[in-house]
Length: 476
Ligand code: 4AD
Ligand code: MG
Image (cartoon, rainbow, N blue to C red; front, side, top):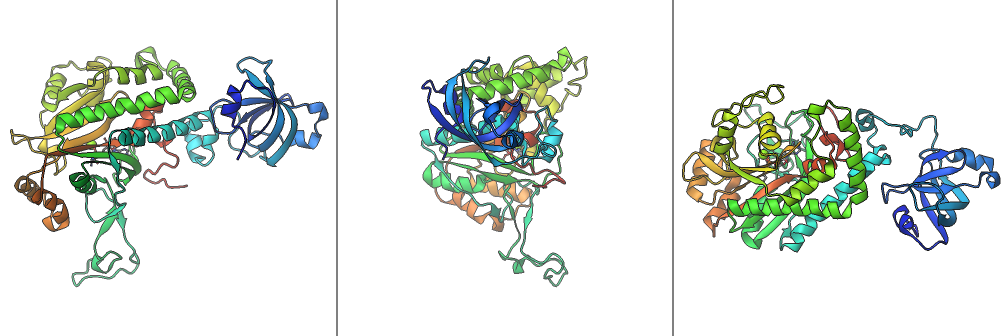
């Protein structure tokens, strides 16, 4: 273990001899090393006494090289830093060939960096995003732990389709070239590893429900897989989802929980990730400046995060939202041109953006959606046509949370499954929850990467997860 990190040294006021290991970001004038060790967005300046340093060593201080430095921590003469290290000894731990090293000290495009995902966290932007991702993950566990929830590990390999959307990755141990066949010539999954068809989970919700109905308040936080072929900046084939589930809680309670939770985790990073957020805020601000005035974001990143923590989310029923959309005039600049919608249709992202960014200018919780556009397990309302669903829409992101009160009545749930051709044999254990001690219960799913996008201001979901999985892309 290093005795110090760059983060601790930059706050140190006790001038003394220090040892530090890290990677060279830049080496200027044969004299000034900007050293980073991942502990902070900031580098520490290490000043090399080049006249008394072996020329062979000087040559090997290149961008990307790993070094061990001993020196005296002194007050800095330069601007923008309080301390620096006057190097007394430098050891090259790992060379980095300046000619071939992909991460040159210049601005790279995100496309280029995606192709070098194994090295991209060596840039300021990606190291800041990944530290923020780690902090958000911690804040989520902390929130639930502080509020009496139990963390459940739900299975990755499942025999059911929780969302009923059929967008699953098959898990099979059969030889694809020579699978066993049934008499009808179909692949015989009875002879597969699990004796049935299995897939990677699309959601841990159904299993979380079983635990909520005994432990009361639970949550999952795990990888989730969707074989939806949507090549957008908001979809991944492998993403992480947080799914709380609570017994005896209705839809209104679910909205309260989701809003409090979102505000709490964003407050946590505002308080604990100031340097990274400031860097990302400046980065985004500079990027926005390159856009035409009309397209620029009205708020800076940190302002936007504070706005979310300080203002109530607008709660609007689907039906009210449709009325708003119908009564809105198409925008002259054609940015939101398809804003007229029929009752019963699913909202497209331009509708969501209109509601959040133009009409309410605030996060929105949309609830009571038409039953036919939502999953089978949602609680049917008394009107017989809407369900107690809720989606939370965030500016710049669109849907960030999807949740509902669950159908707790056995007969209604069975009718719904029959109408959708979902065999009862497949979900007999889920139906048991309604047979034995059923009760009102609710929960939601937060797409973790969408939260990281919002908090970091990154606009492509591929840039907030270490190794993105998207159609035609699983290089790493
Ligand atoms: O709305 P979804 O599909 O809801 C569920 O899976 C429920 N079982 C959740 C629950 O009630 N426990 O997904 C929930 C969230 C979405 O709002 C979105 O943020 C994210 O997961 N999400 C994705 N994120 C990245 N890539 C994808 N392909 C995503 N699909 C959904
Ligand atoms: Mg959804």
